[in-house]
Amino acid sequence: MAEPHSAHDSTAFVHALSEQLRNAGVPLWRLRFALMTMHPEVLWRSVFWRADEGASVIDQAHRRLEDPFYTESPVAAVRKSGESLRVRLLPGELPYALCRELREQGGTDFYAQALPFSNGQVGYITYVTQDPNGFSEATLGLLETVRPFLARRIELESAYYATSALLEVYLGKNAARRVLAGQFQRGGGELFDAVIWFSDVRGFTQLSDGTEPGRVIEILAISTPWQERSRITGVRCSSSSATPCWRSFRWPTIRAARAAGR
Image 1: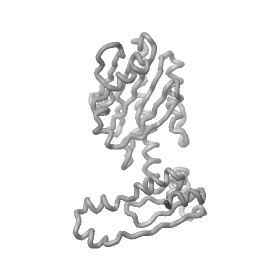
Image 2: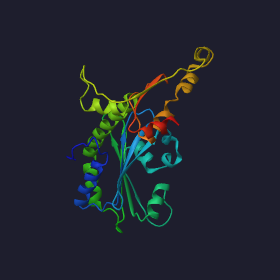
Image 3: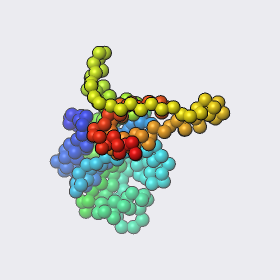
Image 4: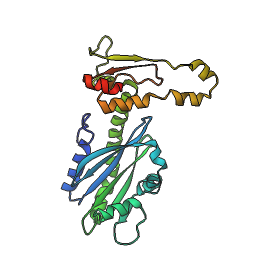
């Protein structure tokens, strides 16, 4: 719990947490929790740890809430009820597709907890073991004891992630990095080579006069392909305004500039 936050490694905390739990005698094979956010495209960031694979992260889109794999999952159940849920991964019928997958991979016991945050959001954490005897009552008692402390710590991790993610969306990665580093005093700045793109929408006045406002916003929301292309090519977008009026891009290489242009 005392592991300091790492702004550069989103898996540092899950590594430290899994190590502490294993040192405390928890036969942990797989651990997963979510970093809640307020990102316009991302619902939350799933943070995974497996004893045989290490840590990884996956950003879940808002449409995840409509996916039957989620709506009929133990995670959805604990987030709705607020109660912990245990599923012994024994032979026979299991209530959740996730649990059936875990059993096929060698899991023997699954334990999920809701993590209520002070802002009203509800996160979660899940534990899986491959121990033939599953989780002991003492282990489950330990996990329940640390749950409120874990909720506060993951809420803080979520806040860090939400702040950085929102800044990257609306300022771009380069500007967000500088703001988070405290480099936002008046008169400060940074010199770099950039390409500035300015464009207009042909016939926009006529379009906006004869089109429903919601549809106009959908048409203007063409920044996503540029942002995706920027991530693929390594281009750093310094601005991400809501309308496609202008962008400035910081090109790491000439090859990246040409690739994005295509």
